[in-house]
Length: 281
Image (cartoon, rainbow, N blue to C red; front, side):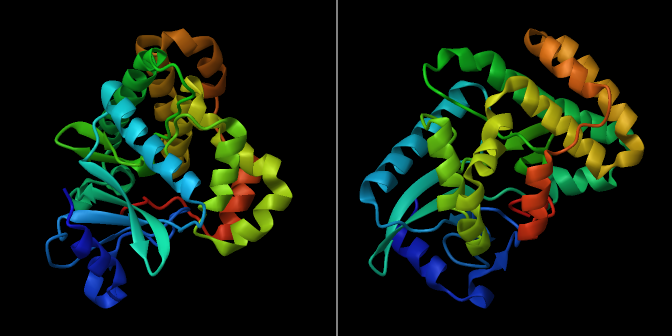
């Protein structure tokens, strides 16, 4: 269990002493890993505080439920803890996660590896997606999954998923749409977003659809390495038939050409300066 005093000290420390900020382009926060001290083997993710205690307590319960559900569904996760810290009179959601080797992030590996090696990584990530959705029927609640390339590490032949925020469990579609604004680390998004709430709410739809999550993975690979797009489409069609045949009628038509991001999400990403960087590296 994390020493909460040490955790508060790490969060309060200035950027130079607390360690490297691992991502500057995350939608919800910029994770960091302390350079030294008792938490030097952890990644710390600090989210916006709220004054609504009931909402925060619910968030904590949902996060615990989501981590438990992911594990029951067969998804490999680094050790992950959720805390509500009292920081200067405000309760702050904080996730503490066992750090993964910096060179294990899947996205940069996909950029530099041979085509054959990237297809091996895609198979590992696809295995996580198929395992989750083929086991998700056991949950009698709304549950989703966001298995993009940037949310995976690839280590020792396995894909490890590490993105547990927001917890995609129990919340209704409308509630999750509001959370996308409420916890955004981008002030501009919180200001502009409510004017486009229906569009913001739609961002999540892919995460709650088995075929769309696989199509999203293939689309990410095609955008990352456009010269190899046909190989990723071939892999996606084959993988759908082998591992996700339940959803073949929905997935296969979308895997004939490189999948594209919805126009509104592309617009939001440009507006916020999000370029698809991995969210912990």
